[in-house]
Every structure is written in structure tokens, then in C-alpha cells.
Amino acid sequence: MNVFLIYDITHDQTRTKVADLCLDYGLDRIQYSAFEGKLKRTHQEELMLKIKKLLGKKQGDVRLIQICHDDWEKQLLIKNLAPAESKVVIEET
Amino acid sequence: MNVFLIYDITHDQTRTKVADLCLDYGLDRIQYSAFEGKLKRTHQEELMLKIKKLLGKKQGDVRLIQICHDDWEKQLLIKNLAPAESKVVIEET
Image 1: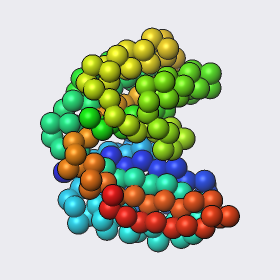
Image 2 (image 1 turned 135 degrees about the vertical axis):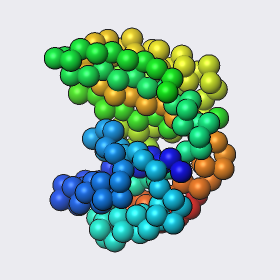
Image 3 (image 1 turned 135 degrees about the horizontal axis):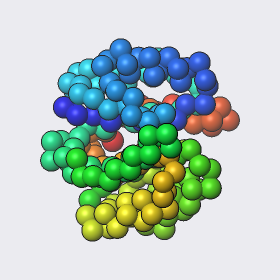
């Protein structure tokens, strides 16, 4: 199942640990605070419980959203790379 | 149709303008760089074209993902408010 995970975590060290955990679960970083990838439902829940534990009582907002195939295909994307690469893409993936 | 819009935009002024545009389209800010709300497909495309115009050739990554009702209901959320409020929620919305 395709998923997006986005977070807003104030504490730098915790944010880094959460990012590492997402990578451990095989997710790909697509933005500074956003990951995408494939996770079974049990792994989605497991990952979120681990993040909850890492976060403790520190301020944060973390969302994991599973996306069905149809919606995944319909996502709209604008991607301008750094000026050196100067590639502009708008596509319906 | 429920949507998430997430962005990573380096240029401060453009980022602010994109955020304002999202609010103009009735989306709610849920994280520093993430909005959610309801948008018809035509409005999704219209909004992304306006963002593309605002962004010009400046560096940025913007994604708009529509989420079907089933997936929307299944999103996993961790929300720790600022310490003064000290509320911790983990819920399946």
C-alpha cells in the first residue's frame, strides 16, 4: 500500500531520529518533512507507535496517509530542481 | 474530494504566496508546509497551475494528492500540542 508520511517536529534531534526511522522502514524522502513508500497496514501502525515513543511529550504533528492506487496515479506534481539543473516538470504521475 | 497539499519551497516570499493561495482555495493549514481540505478535480488542477506560475523557475517541490474516503478515514495521526496544552493524541481518524 502506498503511503505518505509528513511531520512537523520542533525538536531537531527527534526530527532526525524520526527521519532515520522512516528510512529504516524503506520510505523515500521526497521533501524536507515528507516521505513516501510502500507499507503494509501492520507496519504503518508499528512505525507510528515507534514515532510516538520517540516523540514522547515533545511537540509534534505526524500523519501517515495510505493512498489507493487510483489516487496515487492522480497525484499532481510540480518539481523545479535547483537552478543548476533548471528542470521544470508538471505532470500527472 | 479530500486532498493533501505539501510543498518544499526555498524562496520565502514565494512560499508565503503559495500558502495564501492554498488558504484562498479553502484549504486548512495542518503543518508548516502542509494543507488539507476538499477540492474538486478542476480546482485541484487550477490551483496547481497557479502555484506553478507563482513558482516560475524557482526551486520547489509541490504535491497535491487526492484521498478517497476510505483512506482518509484510515489516516494515522500523532498530535502533541505545545507543552502548555500538553495534550497527546494518537488516533485513527
